[in-house]
Length: 131
Image 1 (cartoon, one colour):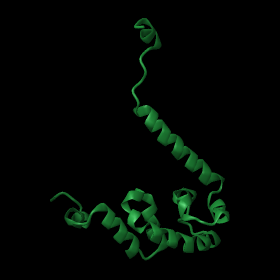
Image 2: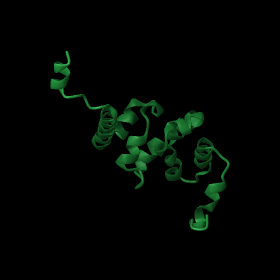
Image 3: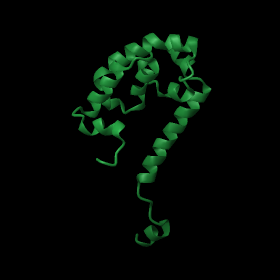
Image 4: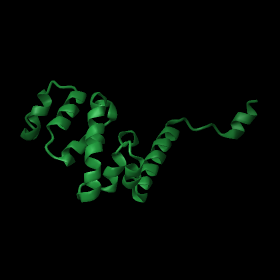
């Protein structure tokens, strides 16, 4: 403990679970950019406030699309779950071409991880010899 940055010492003694921490962080955030951080963590860590997040996104998305804040990058847009946007026209405005590319690459990466985790097949010749 002596070698850690004093700024982070409180994190070693927090009794909250990860879910509680993320929920507290969402509700205590004072800016949309900070609230948006909830979408960067696993959804299981905030499933209890899923409706609150959806309501917040529903109210803020039209404003963000109009104002185009600098923090709302294509990457951030790609984090907005489709289930959170009931208005399909609004969803299509969020999911521009760059966002679709990011989402497709994320899907490919997930598939590659699964395929990479599978054992490599034995040499086909060895398999045929053993028949």
